[in-house]
Length: 166
Image (cartoon, rainbow, N blue to C red; front, top):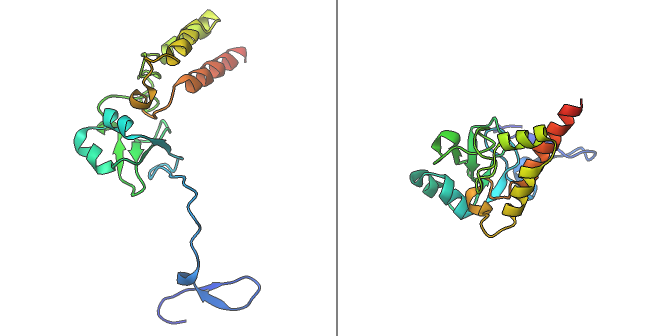
C-alpha cells in the first residue's frame, strides 16, 4: 500500500477498506472533561454567569459542562475543549475547595455535616432540606453544578456514619 494510507481489515472477509470510508460512531450526548475525562454535568447560562469571570465567560457560550472531580483543575468546559479552571472563578466552590460551602444557597458546610454526625442526629441536614425546598433556594444559579446539594450532603453524612461504625 502506498501513500501512507493504512488499510482497515474487515473481519472474515479478507479484503481491505480505507478508514476514511467507515462511519464514525454516533455521539450519545455525553461530554467529558478535557483534562481528567470525568463525565461532565450540563450547566445553564445563569450558572456560568454567576461563577465565571466575564472575559472568560464569553468564550464558553451557552452550552457548557461542570467537572465534579475534586482533584481536577478544570471547573467548566465546552465541546471544543475550551475550559475554565479553579483560579479563574469569581469565588471558591465545592468540591474543588473542600472549605467552600457545599450549599451555595444557604452556606451549609462539611463542618455542619460533621456536627450532625457527632450529635448523632441529622438536625442541621433536616433544616437544610426544608430550606432547599423553599423559594429561597437558587440552586441552578448559585450551585457550581446547577443542582441541589441535598444528594451530596446525604451521601457525605451516610459515608461519615459508616466510617464511625467501622
